[in-house]
Length: 287
Image (cartoon, rainbow, N blue to C red):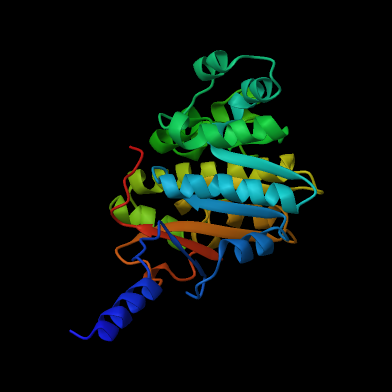
């Protein structure tokens, strides 16, 4: 083989470079590829940003921390809201963030998710370091469980103190929202107590998180809220309730999805959120 030909092939190989395997790709709602920088700059102009995660996805949790870090540099004031903390844990969360109690006490007394250490501790540590408020937005699970078994009517039996941890009653539920219809379908369709109560339980979570965000958020701050993707998918769930409390809020959304390929956004995933993070289907989960 000609020496010049060998040299040309070698140079072409170097120019092409090694094959890369990205951990994620990022798209707009319409499926146009975009960058983290552009996304963060746009989201910094919002009042509330919802990051819809897959709870066991390490890439999504890393991006939450990266986004919080970047937004903290861009905006005047940043707050974090988290589905992963229930409203009756706010006191112990505040005490830990302010340094009044040790981490051992915090872990013992707060109702932490099993994957807290790997998936949520880093962002709590970030907030503690930078003295950012963290709002425990979710309804205490015992009340969501009560509704799942007995329906919303059971909440009328709660004490005035207990009612401070949930959205104001009576609670409006629209069972025709596509997300709630999907829940009902998976539970056997409309009409059954099990499907109706599950929808009501989900709505109680959504409404309580919306009410907490509305009540806690400072008007001068951007609030980044972390929640399961289903709670804000297609701007339903939490956002449906929040827009009824504050219709003028500027709201941005992110959602993490899994695909076998990362080059293009599958049609089924378009319009799920303003920005869609695609991670490989075979990505190792944290549980």
